[in-house]
Image 1 (cartoon, rainbow, N blue to C red):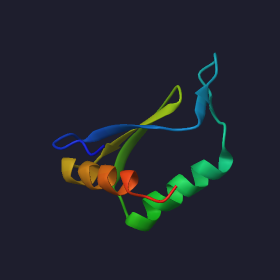
Image 2: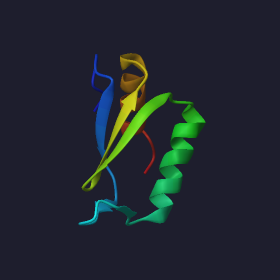
Image 3: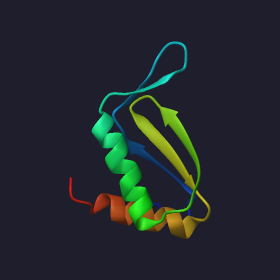
Image 4: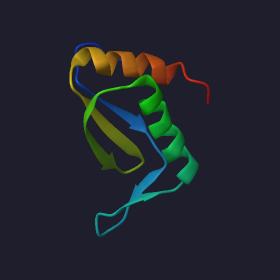
Amino acid sequence: MAPSGRKSIIIDAPIMITSNKIAVWMDENWMFDFFDFIKKHKFKISGMNHMQKKIKLTFVNAHECTIFGLKYAGRKK
C-alpha cells in the first residue's frame, strides 16, 4: 500500500506493547532487517510510533512516504 499525499504510514510489525507501555520486539531479526532496509534506501523518517503489532512511520514529506510504501510492498520477504 502506498498512500499518496500522506506523510505517515502504518505497517504490520512483530512488536508487542506491555501493560507498562514498553515495546517488545517478538522477532529480533525482523527489526534489524527493517532498519537495514530503511538505511539502504535512505528514507528520511521524522518520527516512529510503536503500536500493538504495528509501527507508524512519519516521513519528512508525502513523496518519501509514497516511495517507501511502494518499495516496502515490493520487497522480497
